[in-house]
Length: 137
View (cartoon, rainbow, N blue to C red):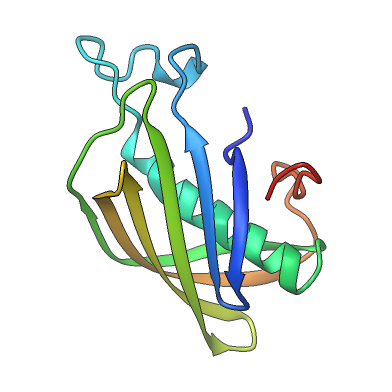
């Protein structure tokens, strides 16, 4: 499962990613069995993936990020199969290897989640991460 369907670098410190929630994605089975809901932790992961795509495009592909802390997190809407996740992120350097990230996740233009977090930028690729797809953009 690719955590990002498409991405667009808006500026050197802003990025937007999109992903369609699919009914056949294996992680949905059993998560709230009565009603299929996209897990909130995956929205946080979408923000991390957005930052990765920004870094890969602006600094090179040999990087990964490590969450240091979540400073604020609020969910205001749920995602179900067929919904498109749009995560817009702004990054601000705190030090040479840490970023303050503000993410706004929307569903159909409506705010669904906000997150403020601090990420550490590390050299080398995490084995679980895939590089940017040449067809994405």
